[in-house]
Image (tube, rainbow over all chains, first blue to last red; front, side, top):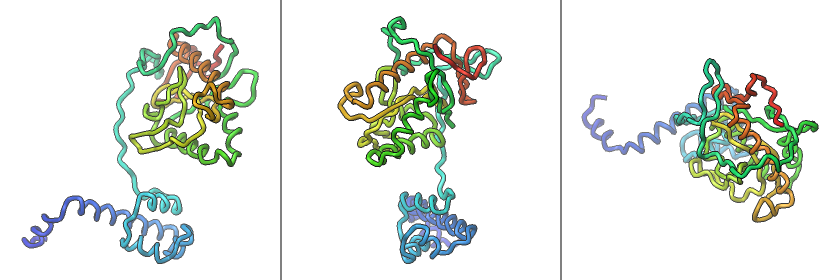
Length: 134
Length: 157
């Protein structure tokens, strides 16, 4: 919009409010889309969540501050994700050294790994066990 | 995201972790603690990876989950009465052992836990030694372990 008044008014809206409105709108659009995909109406959603239809109506009209718990309930009821959080990049581990010409690594040194220098194999039982995928 | 390994005594049918699941999955009294623990395993296994913040309850060579509190995700496990022993190998591999009910101040004094704690330390020592000696190799990107000769069947004597 080119209106100077509009631009000025917009500048006065705190960034936090803008972010909230945008998030809220995105969530409601997503929920309504999922309802349509699954052939559900407010009544059907209320039944799934064991809630009053009037409460669901408030959620879907934006008259209610959706909490994370409410969103989690909606995700479970609709069996779809509603919000996705951007994953945090994780640092590479430096405890493993690559075996040449192999996808596998060998242990180098991990200071966090507690090791017991007093470990005396002679004193241990020597029962064999197998490592397998749980 | 994470491959969970477990250990099985050579002459036994059930793995140590299956023994734990079998013992606690049907007990109403520990239901909340058990469900929390299973949800944590799913969170680590499917969504977050084996981040060090989940493995802070070091008990000698082994680690017990759940941790008391995970600051990063605001997860509070302080009321959880169960302990499942494990070792975190890397971000994508965790080896689970057996566990039990923490009923006293220490694992050694907890009737249901002390033998599991002793076994967990034994497994952890043996496994770390095998890794240090190059007998077990780790494929972080493929989330898998194998023995030095390329065999995926890993037997530790």
